Each structure stands twice: as C-alpha cells, then as structure tokens.
Image 1 (cartoon, helix red, strand yellow):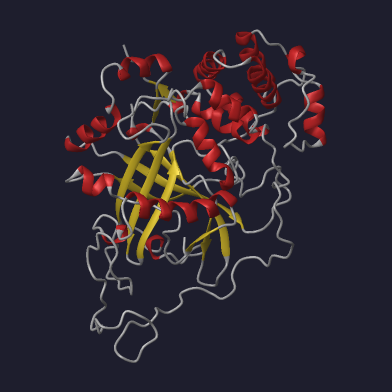
Image 2 (cartoon, helix red, strand yellow):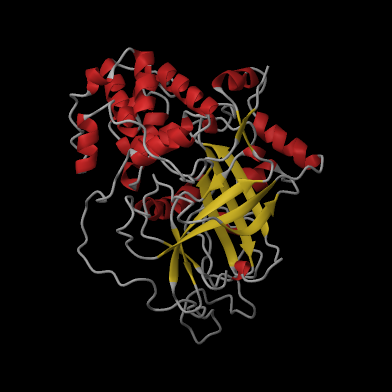
Length: 466
C-alpha cells in the first residue's frame, strides 16, 4: 500500500494496531431497542504509532443526504414528534423523504433486511464518505473503506425483530459480549476502493457523493487488514459511553476529500464530543493516543492531566518561546498535494445527482427475499402516510425501478397512471434521460445490471426467529 499512502499503519505486512470499536443505533435514545429498524453506527478508533485515527461510518454504505446543512432537518424527521413525542412517525419520515430524492437509495437499504442486522457480528461496515490517501511524493488517491464480516452477513425481517424485541432490548450488545467471552472472537476484513483524484467526467455519479457507492467491477476491493475483537470493555461507561469519535481524527498519509458531507461532519463531530463528554475528552484514556503527546492546552472542566512534554518548562504554555516551552512539530505534509483546482466558489447542488439509478440497481441486485421484504416494509410504512406523500414516494420508486414502483404502488392502490403526471420537485434538475423516464413512468422496463458488482450486494442469510 506504500504506493498509495505513507500512513505507517499500512506499511508493514503483519503489523498489529490496537483498536476500539463502538456499534450503535442512530434514531433511538440510549436505551432504545437494538432490534429496531435503524442504520447502525460502525466506528473504529485505531491507536496507531502516529496517534489516533477514527474511521466513523455505518453498516449500509451510503447516507440519506449529501449536504451537511440538511442534517438537522433530516434528524428532526427521524426523531419523535415535538408535540406528541410519537417515535418515528411514518408521515414525518416520508414527508421528508418524498421531498429529498437523494435519500431514496438509503431508504431502499434501511427498509430492506439490511436495516435489521441479526447481530453486530454479522453486519458489514463502511466509511461511507470518500477520503484521500497521500503517498511520500504527495500524490493523492480517493479512497472508500469497507469492513466485511468473516462471520457472513445475516439479517432479520420485521417479524423476526418483533419477536426478539419482545424478549430483550439490548440483544446485540449481549450477543457480542457472550461471543467474545466464549472466545468466539468476531473479525472483519478491511478493504479499500481506490480512484484517481480527479473529476471523473466518465462516471454518471459524483465520486464524492455519499448517497452513492462505487461499482466494484470498476473499482475493485483491495484487502489491507483484518480486525479482530478479542476483549470487552472493563467498564462500560469509561470505555464505551465515553469513547468519542470524529472524522477529523486522522494521521499522516490519510486525508479528507472535498465530500460536502464529510466536511460538515468534521466540523460537527468534535463539537458534539466537547458538549457530550466535556472539553477535555481527548485526555480520557480511551480517547488518548498510545504514543506520547504534548500540548499547550490547560484547564477547562474535568481536566484529567497536564500534557507536558519531556523537559518542558511548566510555566510556558505557548509557542514560540525561548524559555523551555514546546516547539511545533515538523510539518509532515507537502505544501501542495493533489490535483490543481480552479473555479468559482458557489452554493449549488452538485451537477451529477442521479438519485435513482443506484436505488434501482440496488433493488435488482438484491436477493428475492430481500426484495419481498423491502416491498412489504415500504407498503406497511407508507400506508400510514397522507395520499400526496404516498403518491410522490411511488413516483420516486418508479423512477428508480419499474418493478419496485409497481409492487409498492399495488400495495397502496396507486398505479403509474395515477402519478405519471406529477412534475419533478422544484429542487430537482432532471437530465434528459430522467425526463424521458418520467414521461414513460412504469413503462421503462428493468435496468440492465448484467455484470454489475455492487457494494453491499453480498449473500445475506435470513435468520428466522420463532
């Protein structure tokens, strides 16, 4: 991997790096059911020789939105009604989704069995956003991260999850603890996809769009390591509740891309940890690097230690100084790296949105039981929504794939003829091909997925719960 990155944890075959992992649900509170339909957070902290690296993603590979400015609105649509406090009201969830077509791909995953993993041990993980790798020469590559469980991928249907939820709320945490305590250590292979760091006009999607995946037949997975979880926290609060992740926690050789969602996450995540844990959260043992470090930060609530350097004058907490203070570390990167960019700063949607192709491909590349379950779950949820929301969602699903729109529409009593006259949303700028598809809604035929190797479309075992 040294051809692509100078990050030291990827330089030597057989090198071991300690990690800490937190799996989580998203929409619910701390004690919400782990058997609820929800994306799962998949966050890994690497304690490398150069400091900590946090890889913060989820189990589904994409996200609902591509612009971080919409994150508060999205979360509000998933959280309880502010008046009645009803949890995840379908009319609110799909009101937002119906007006946000970029979310269709993610909803096709969340409402499939992938939204109900049978165990944390049998779910995939992804970095979701596009990052960069930097080599010794300052050359950059775009990169996506994938965690593939060596236990295989296994999921539930809503009926299975309902049985489990009636017995226990923390079923996945208990399963993880019991497996590790029994010596059945779960492991995941870490793979990357690499792409040259340029515009890629030949693609029909933007490689920095977090609502999209990269086709694996064009950008194959490359294995870079294996993660094995071989112990549980000695204390849940200190090592799990207080562990704090952020997309801005990187080491030399790993870098950000211009992914708009990643930029927003990098600002917000560390702010969140300062509020949630405290301003000195990085001093806590679970968050501190294993290598020696020194800073000029002092005081603040819950200060855990003083980050003095070896031989540092404790009276000097600033830089520069000739009185024995710290010296700024040697700048590890190049002054110029990556492609040269020219243009004008604007506030616009990205030009290559293509909100429907991958959602339709996802449906066609899924196993039959996954398709059936996705349709049933959409029909069940949308049956609780107002008619205009139902119609717009059926229109979106027809735009993604005829069969998906037809089957969900049949369940709701809505045909392609009923929604063909709907105009695109004011926020949409459809391509000529998409306008033609809208004009022929329900008559376009199946998309061609011959030879397509799509992220997340791996064998998924249905774990039946009785």
